[in-house]
Image (cartoon, rainbow, N blue to C red; front, top):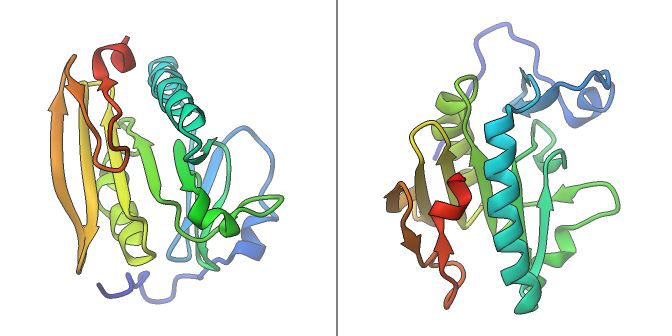
Amino acid sequence: MSRIQPPAGQIILTYEDYLQLPDDNNRYEILEGVLYVTPSPSTGHQRVSRNLGYSLFNHVLDNDLGEIFFAPYDVILSEISVTQPDLIFISHERQHIITEGNVRGAPDLVVEITSPHTKGRDKSLKAQIYARHGVNFYWVLDPATQTMEEFRLEAGGFRLVGRHHGPTVIRPEIFPGWELDLGEVWE
């Protein structure tokens, strides 16, 4: 997959520039050197994040699989791609990417919960960046349609391995033996 090129003449921002941004309750990300600003998540978004996070956290903790982190938390994929996914999982095998202040490298799993402001970016630009930097699994949850899409990294990018709608029970490939009740996530 090729690097995404910003429009001609556009300034490329880096992680050092990112560190200078104001602390104003907005979520900032730099994707391929381009700054994106997103307002705080809605109540529905927060509920989905909490419900999924609670279930996933308990499974990871009970089975000693690694660590779960929640936004806001910087994931530095490169000096020009810094994201704040809604939720990430890092296995014990990859714990070396966890630093005192952020994650420097690709998590095993990245979860984005879409909003009207982020849906297009989450499903296209961010998916390309996550794939290029080696995120093995990518989940996109859309609270408005109660849809979850599971992607797995394969040669050249992500492949859709499951699209789930409404209150269904799924068995995510990344966590063998775990059953996730999406009905509880959408509550």
